[in-house]
Image (cartoon, rainbow, N blue to C red; front, side, top):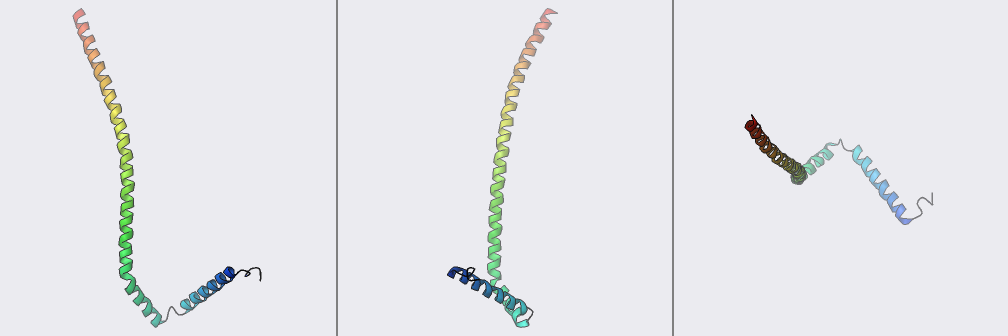
Length: 113
């Protein structure tokens, strides 16, 4: 036991833990008392504006986070669409050249007939 509580910091931690545990048990034992319930309701009423403000702040931060994620997704979509557009433009140019050659060959075939 002396090695367990040998250091001063370990003894302090043990004492703090014991005090917190005892406080928790006492609060649990008296939580159904009407006076304690009134105190809980009063504390809840007093801290409600802070709770609402923190809820609004958290909602705003979540909104900013989702907006950043949406912007990133749109940036990736934009890059893939740009690549697709370039591919289609190149294919369109190739098809225009094929069309020109096809018209030229059709003209040559009509001359021979």
